[in-house]
Amino acid sequence: MMHAGTDEGLYGLTIHAAAKLLQAGEITATELTQAVLERIYAVDNDVKAYLALTPETALEQAIEADKALAIARAAGELDFLSPLTGVPLAIKDVISVEGVPATAGSRILEGYVPPYQSTAVNKLRAAGAVILGKTNTDEFAMGSSTENSAYFTTHNPWDLERVPGGSSGGSAAAVVAGECLGALGSDTGGSVRQPAALCGIVGIKPTYGRVSRYGLIAYASSLDQIGTFGKDVTDAAILLNGIAGYDRRDSTSVDLPVPDYRAALQPGARQAGHPGKGSLRGLRVGVPKEYFISGMQPEVELAVHQAIGVLGQLGAEVREVSLPHTDLALPVYYMIAPAEASANLARYDGIRYGLSVPAGTLWESYRDTRGRGFGPEVKRRIMLGTYALSAGYYDAYYLKAQQVRTLIKQDFEAALLDVDIIACPTTPTTAFRIGEKVNDPLSMYLSDVFTLSLNLAGMCGLSLPCGFDTAGLPIGLQLMAGAFREETVLRAAYVYEQATDWHKRRPTL
Image (cartoon, rainbow, N blue to C red; front, side):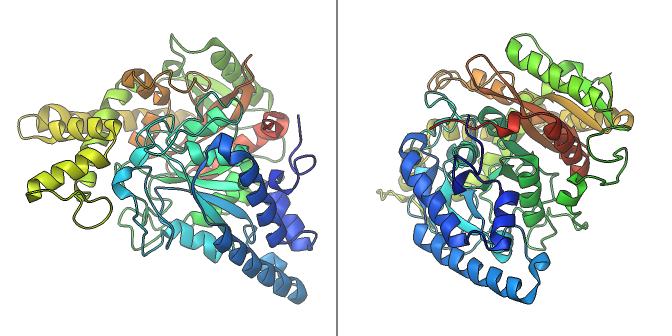
């Protein structure tokens, strides 16, 4: 197995390793960006991670970064530079980048080029990051495999016949394949954590309100949150530092100070229950009995139990907790999310932007545009959501789902009075074969059964690699904590990562 940054070349570097080399002047941002672009040209015909690539712009941004690095080096001010300066990143195609097509993986937005930029991308650019392009996604982020993209399916770099997960499958695949050093995704019901698990990398779903949603194409507004992908915990934390913070343009953004997430990982970092490197003494880890269910892949269950055992060996106190309404998370999510999608997707009518199908009457134009522009999964969720919001059924379905959502949130709050973090599987299985579940929506929805609850509760979590099955496919460990407790999950993940080597493995393409 090749090791990042050695046999793999520059494209295999982690963000933090690249930052060191860039600041020392050992490599340039232009060289790094060119190396990653060449990697994309070499492997993306097989992986199919990107919907749009912007090589000319990326190289221009790399030249700018090299100038900033040279000035800071000459002035002895490298400490003031972001570790993202000159680092090539990928952006999921539901996050707007000014002047770059944004399709959300849908035909209905074909040809749409946003005239503005998301706050998250603005922050990355202000930090000097290089934007390589837009990655593939399930249409409007509705899916668990990227098979719902209107353009093509992304392939898992560990096995090209399998899915990378979804809906941020393009971003996850790009990171593990060396087609970028890090990436942004969005997580509505697990769409960062699930593909991170299936691709063997780290994916963070921040607390709702921690990262601005301005410029994020909405699926379900009370659930959507932009998250980060990294080759290891440090990279994912650096990216989260780069995009977190209050934004007055997003009414759901929370005005709280942003901690230095990377500093929380370092040896000697002191916070509740974390005495220093290599130890989790004082950390209380809860294991929810409801998350180990029948039908789960035995290798996943074994690997996650072993990972929880490692947390215990590192000094954590492990105890069982209960989240009694877990079995209701799936139906609650698939009532609330489609209802919000029904409202959000009403704006795609063929009149203002995107696809427009002319017809004899305005009503026929609406019908033909939406009929041709939306794929089957989006139509399924719009119909389900519209039904749930209709006058005769609102109280019975949507209102009841919101009440149960409150119970799910209260389950987490009660459990987190007794423990600091909750540890469980990210997914019930490893990556499944392309086409295996495409005609069975319920089976596909079950891929997110362990991730949905966190979005309903508005709390934070991450997935990191904790093993491989006998087919050589990655297995993810999910760590969750209360609102704005990202430091706690990151610290626990980092200490676990340093005690294992799962994160060092890379697929051979």
